[in-house]
Length: 224
Image (cartoon, rainbow, N blue to C red; front, side, top):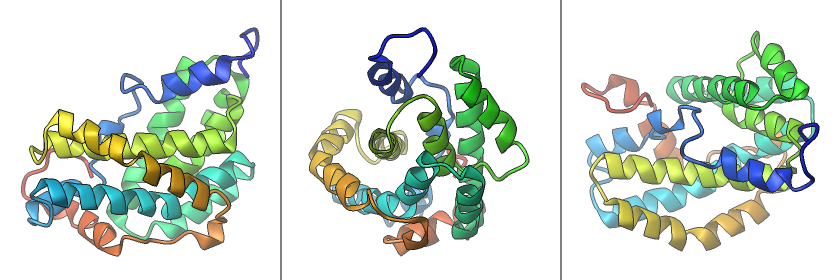
């Protein structure tokens, strides 16, 4: 907890971290959706719905184990394991970019010595997003369950926003889809809560494969 602040700081902190105005650069990434749209794999409301549903489960299995493990400590080992797990060059680079942006932003925003220490500790390492998210939220006093839930929310919000900016669906429909996926988010949060790093897996291989083609697109709106 940030020194000198009230005992309810975690609730306000989680709201701040999940705010779209929090500048971590997440909206620069589409999670492979842009490549899927250009490949005509996603071109309708039904396609977006299916993509988001598969992606939420994929994030639960491929990212939440690293969020959980880093929330428990041993960041260096967890970060190295995440680096080995992310075999796609595009996904690996995007994860490192987002992880560094997240810890840098948190170190500038939150006057907490543990976050500042993580910023220094992460510099010579890959600094992947999921491990850094778990480590930073732990340093700020959030529980592992809270970290997992916020991470899931941010991931879904980013994908839905990407679909809007790519012109596949409108903003109202995107929010309706996020609302309709609340039950799925709850199941993923519960089912993936105890997964270890060794159990991390890709449950949506097509999304992983098509995301890896992003850097070969002729024109790109997103970084990944």
